[in-house]
Length: 459
Ligand code: NAD
Image 1 (cartoon, rainbow, N blue to C red):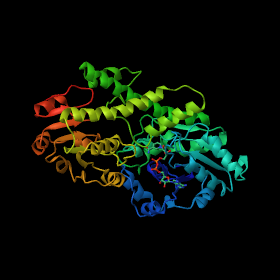
Image 2: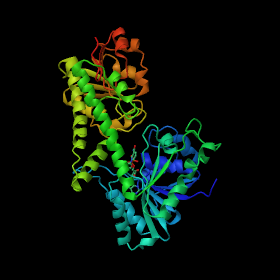
Image 3: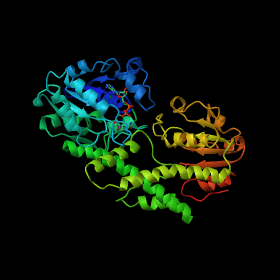
């Protein structure tokens, strides 16, 4: 093992916490900084606060040793060679990324720089952010040669965040100085040279040595654009297949067959061609909006992104129309909602289309009984209390006596539901599936009225 590098990670959310623990797993020493004292105390005590595979195991292994959690950014700046900024960059009212948290961290770092530091944008930020960070630091009296700002965007997916971090499709390092690029290349060396994958302490079942991740060195601005363009492209792929699924419904074709036929073309690929109720989460919606805003500000016509957003919004409305089409009037209907997280394997409900749909259903006067394997607490905190809303303890509890079941999140647990049991518990055997988790022929055989996305309704 080469010399460990001292790394600070600022922000201990979905990205910062995973990055901090994975850097430790790669052999580095990490200070993970958050300004939320409650969060820091919980992490010090061994509570990850988020639902993510492998995270509890890593936290137990490294907390208060190779990873220290603290609120002290000054100490972290002084002690560490590289400081990763992983704070939130939420959408502002105008659609731009709100970079005020990034700016706050940059100015605080500036006040404590006492030797050469590499400041790393890990948060998703628009192009030119590196220049703003540099300006903020210089304005706070730091000499230009005492630091560099680099962009190292994060591509992890919630649900498989640890695997994604430790075995990414690619690592992008955007640096305009060789000195800074070297530091980042050294930090990721255990992954790029494969030594991490040989380590006997590597978490079992997570990542193999095959296909070592390539590290792409780029300019800082290119790296910033790579992240936004990647997320915009993925969102586009989802909206594209959703639009195709609408066409399939109109033409009485089957979108699963169509998606397979498209995806087998190696230039297109099969991933992200799953129709549903639209994309959500803390990244795609805000990143598409921010990328569009960047293009606008630069006078570049990128209206394609407006269409991507429009299709996404419509997809939820189409689903609601489908519910109405199956149940006629909605007021007073008791609906079992399976899934609140924006996708399976996570407790994240930020911009979840499932939450949007629950709000629409409540607005229509439905009684909603919801169940999600991980996101119940967060949903309860987010949705205003309502007499029309109940949180169930299990799938069975949710579906008992319901007028229909709505599947809104692609949890495996839902795909594996015992159909006979489901049939016996429901008041009416109606399943409206926004994630295409079931085979229509099997649903028909089991006696359900089954509506899904881009496929014919079976009764
Ligand atoms: P998050 O909201 O889960 O975490 C952000 C953390 O930063 C919070 O713990 C908050 O307390 C902390 N914070 C805010 N201001 C701070 C300050 N001044 N000092 C110290 N800590 C501060 O956000 P996230 O989901 O981890 O996303 C972080 C960034 O990474 C965003 O730019 C996001 O777009 C990007 N990203 C997210 C994902 C994802 O799947 N969540 C994937 C790739 C990239």
